[in-house]
Length: 154
Image (cartoon, one colour):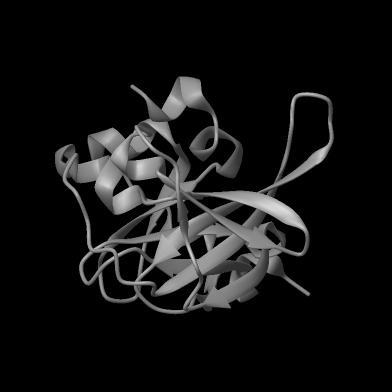
C-alpha cells in the first residue's frame, strides 16, 4: 500500500468549537464520557483536575484554558485518555479535555503546512501541522510535551 496516497491515521481532537488538534493513531487509549473530576487546590487552571481511570490517577489537561489563559467551563464533556513514554521509558497516562469525542482522520504528506502567526503558541507543544479538508491549520501535538511541566508552563 502506498502510504503517500492513502495517508496515515491520526485522531482529530476538538478542544472547543473553534480549535482542533491531532495526535497519532496509537496515542489514544480510551475515551471517558462525562468523567468525575477531582480538583487539585491551587493548581494552574489548565491542569487543575485529575480523574481515576483503570486504577490510575490521570492528570487532565485543558488545552483551551492553556491557550487562552482563561478559566473554562467546568462541564464534564469528554476526556481522551492518551499514553506517552516517561523519563524511565515507562508508559504514562494523561487526559485531554475535549468538546466532542475524537474523530479518526487520514493525513497525507501533501497536507503539511506552514505555521500561521495566530498559532505560534502551539509550536511549543507540536511536532508539525497539517491543513484539514476544510482548510483549518491543525497542530499535531506531542503528548510528552503536553504533560511536561517545562513545556506547558512557558
